[in-house]
Image (cartoon, rainbow, N blue to C red; front, side, top):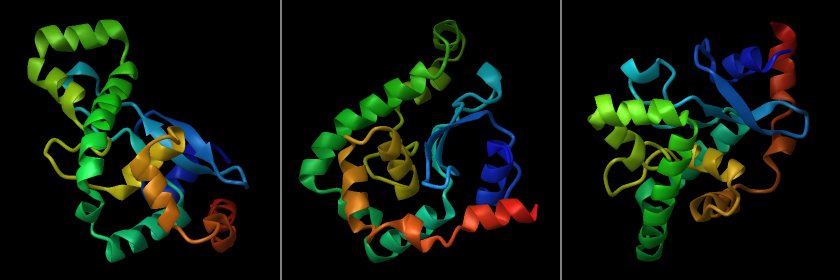
Length: 175
């Protein structure tokens, strides 16, 4: 089965954006994807969260973490300082997904869109807080030195792949 169909089944919706699988599980199914931040080109909105967690078991694990640990609990003073740097890194990584000439055109013709591209955090944050641990964990799967992702991974008990029961294999064989 192709990745487009699997990711659509995992997310329970039709996928209409270009993406790249950035992490696969032991069974070879997508766990996280990287989306095009400008799926509609310069005229469309910025897809400010290009890092997506698609694995249903990891999503379930992260939801459980968010239920026990409000996202703002991760905002220790030390992490706020570290996250400023990672927010800039995430914005740079988002911008590197866009061809240089397109980025220059955005800078010239759509300064507010450009500002959005270069200022948003990992999960599209534009203020001082955090949101969506799923996006932060997907970012961590691509960049394992990301401190928040490491913190999240420590809260996931054991091996989630052992608990999924081959869910993706089952859903992909049914369609």
